[in-house]
Length: 328
Image 1: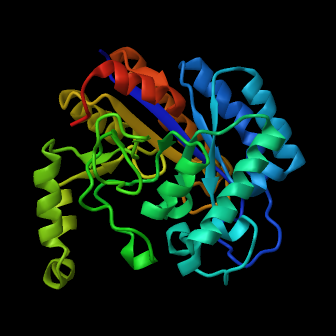
Image 2: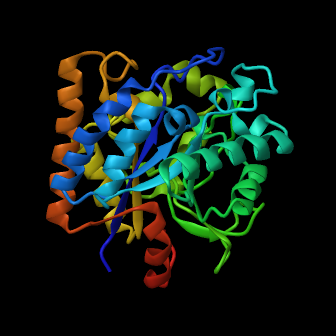
Image 3: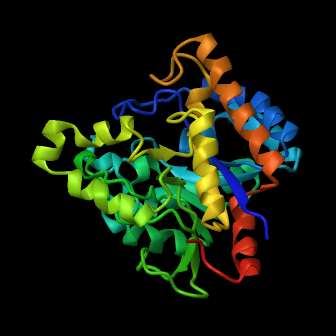
């Protein structure tokens, strides 16, 4: 069976990093039709994971409904706690992580967003990603109770602790089924499917490379910048399957590693704000916008030539069932 690729977009407000605002712009959503046109050209079936400001703005609702009418995408849920009512918490960096809120408030916010997506976009979302990757056992239980089937909130090999978030540094880039609340324990026939963001090492042996990186994460290692040295000499190259963090060549090389590992599903990810110049440090000029699109074109040309099958997150469950095995 060929390897499959999911492309997941955090489809969100322009000024998402401002936790204290009363209103949020969604101007970047006007770039989605051009993005979908690029996807259609390469047979990509994206999953747009939308936030509350996007799901409740008249203009962005109109844009997404037109894209949905094309039938080549999925709408999922992406929760930014600071822009999702009710606002019962202090809006700050700590509380920007959904996992740090009380279970009751998680239920309220996710319930409000889920209903907004269904009521305004006419779809019952079944795929989820926590904003800022603020995922936890409690969050998984809430989304299960709301009827979600797929989570994509884990960034393998990555520790968000310094940002008040979860530590995923021991998680591998593999898809697996699990029962809540044990989000890291693989269970055949589990209630939910985890399709993590694809992050790996070009050296291939992910578990060994991860162990080396953890060993370097000491005060001395950071002082000597040992990880940077190993990266420059090509001995420890961690790559994110994201056009925001990697160029086309790096994404292609990582994909080759995942193909060699007989991976069932890889997951490319980025933010809708990267489609419009000036909304992030990643794309600051109109020329950056063009380069960002060209980076995806080069990568999508490769995956088409390699015969990878594009899927939405909704379709990932069927892929895992048909594969009869787990990613490695």
